[in-house]
Length: 299
Image (cartoon, rainbow, N blue to C red; front, side, top):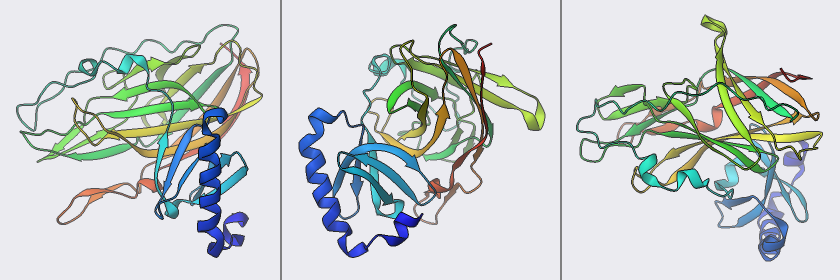
């Protein structure tokens, strides 16, 4: 991007410090959604309004700031945790007695709702599943759940959970977010939103449609949708959810109609490797590409 190449790196630290201080002072009145921690110790507040392979765009009180991903240590998304997730016993998997124990399947997913008279976003998700590898032991088993938080225009719309791991390799368990009724469930939706998904196609054309019903008061012409995959680096009893992959894309809207997007996920760069300390690599290589977008009558 042109802004990245023309930016004078000698002034980067000073500008970041000024913006960080200003946005922190104005935070209570601004409704800001994200906190970005940089490797140099600076902290930025704002709303992520765009992302590319190499940088993200942060909307701040003083304008938009393009931040190279190599400068970012961590991004915290400040949406409130849904009330349905607060009781830990509802999401905590049973203790495993061996590395091959299978957790129970979640409840079956209901057909995706399409509320009449309201704007609907339907995401036809194809390609690869986001996957992650976990290490644990018989005495301290890894929590293999993966969460998907879906944001619409900066507001958290829905929380989904894939709680059933797929394969076991000694102490390593692999889980992928499959959107299948036996693996994945909708945990909660924010007020005014509805959420569901349904499988489509067969064989190579098999995919899933994630359906979001927007609040009746929604009048936006275009919104930014963000899909944020998270993994638990803590335990089931004491979770510490960490952002793994976040991808954003614009969606056109018309009142009472369905915005139908075909998305292609690419996880071919993800790796779990290392000689002494195994860990996931190349998380930034996971991509979500918009193949097509249309607004049509809600069915």
